[in-house]
Image 1 (spheres, rainbow over the protein chains, first blue to last red):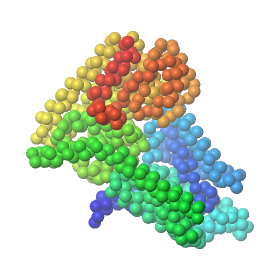
Image 2 (tube, rainbow over the protein chains, first blue to last red):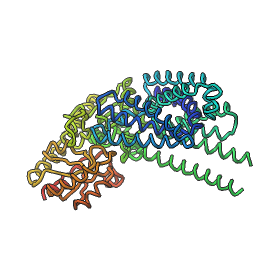
Image 3 (spheres, rainbow over the protein chains, first blue to last red):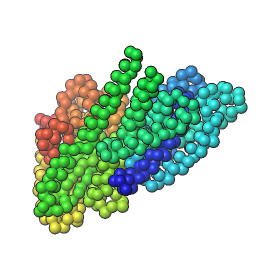
Image 4 (cartoon, one colour):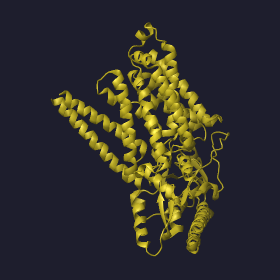
Length: 267
Length: 326
């Protein structure tokens, strides 16, 4: 066995990384097409406010973060309809709200450093218990996305047409919104928000460069996500770099290479 | 055509920047200098004394204490590099590999290291001895001046009081003796020597306080609560308790008033905290800035100048003397 796989923490890192590499682009592709690619960063700041509020009110900070993230993602959903040409406005509004609220709550009470310990996650520090929750989460998300694949696909391009064609848009939007909020608030604690928010977008952006059918784009984004995580973890191991950052840098590197090749071939 | 060239240029530049970024990252996260130095020492000693005790300290003060107590019998590694904030640090896989092989692990606790749970979880399966420094000292709660209610959060900056440093170093010495009985004399000896130096600093703080005409200091980051409590100093913080939190305008005005009311002429800055807000106050209230070192990590200059916990604490005595006793 190569050195990199001899350590328990690296085995768990690879396993958790693979699950995250599959679920993030799988929901990320629908978010990106709805112009909501910044949702990871937005909800993470709301979660920060949730944790600070939980500490202040002496109520489980993690559940508080989950509740607030859920409310915020419904808020984003409402605002998205309000500004439906400019869906990213809804993210900017909720992001500002999250940071503002977090700043007030932190300055109110002695939360300070404690806030960060609730939100800290690193792919190399995944415990066996985390592993279980991420596997369950992964299974639920992949099953839901595959089950509603056609409806989600339809809605991503034209919500009005989808509704007219008989797709239960409201219900599916609700399920999808809950899914996104739960994914972000649980996985940011396990593998770190940097990895979650970037894997939702960058592999999708890379596969959009291929300009192929939706199904190919979907599968390709999962593959790019996997390559980023596997290569990023390996590089971070041998070069002794922070794993989260290395995975993101790898995925950006892949995006640039694919875009460059695409450019050369089209000329 | 022109477009394509531009695109390629951008792509190449981005890749170059990405790699340059990686290069810098290695230097910062690896803290190479210190580790290599230790390794060289190890190599030299290998023939006479095999297997040095491996100690990993979460950040600088504990690295310094372990090095002082262990001397050349231990190889000490510091996890969070100097200049990095322990709160936003992410251990690299190499750190974790070394951690699995370590004999002794020292950390601060009290949420100073948000990543500690994962690390402790990993150490469960090894026979490493773990020192949680915050369990060795009497922890103090944050006293929030604006609000009466308390959330039970404790001040994590335990090492800023030399008397706490003494308790922690004593524990380090005991743990090293446990791991390496043959050399227990040496560990005990270096602890006693270090204890003397710390007592000396403690006494100079006490002497300074006897000459003091005021007992109030203004600081930019509340990191000196333990030291202040020990010597009856009241610490007034400009930015609240977290270096990340924004001070509210009401508090700024209040502090300007306090500075005038108590006739304070100095304000203390720290090495690693953002001094912008404190500078505003310095202009508003005419306060002269002084340095008070929290010794959470050394700057490059301090490292080159060969500073350590003891030397920086001595400078703190002088800075406080200037503000309180002159």
